Amino acid sequence: MMKFEAYLEDSISQKRFVNLQYFTDIHEFMSISCIITGMINKESVTYLSTNTGEEVLLDKVIKIDEFYAPSYAHIDDFTCDC
Image (tube, rainbow, N blue to C red; front, side, top):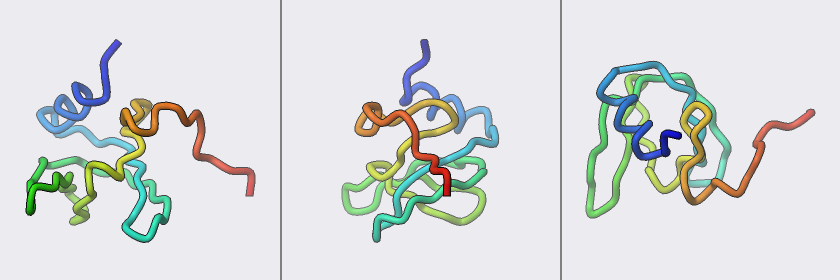
């Protein structure tokens, strides 16, 4: 089974559209469809850059497609019935 890190790297190299779920700096839950164009380091912090212009803090990424980030692997579902 592929791990999150391998899937992230593969998605970047394949320039594949993904469903990216993450928290913003003010803890808003966001879900976007995008191409992750790369990873950038700013002041020792890693961000994902996307074709939509967002720069997402890697530590705030919840999941990419069906692959959960290690820090959020314990959470099964972020959907709601609202």
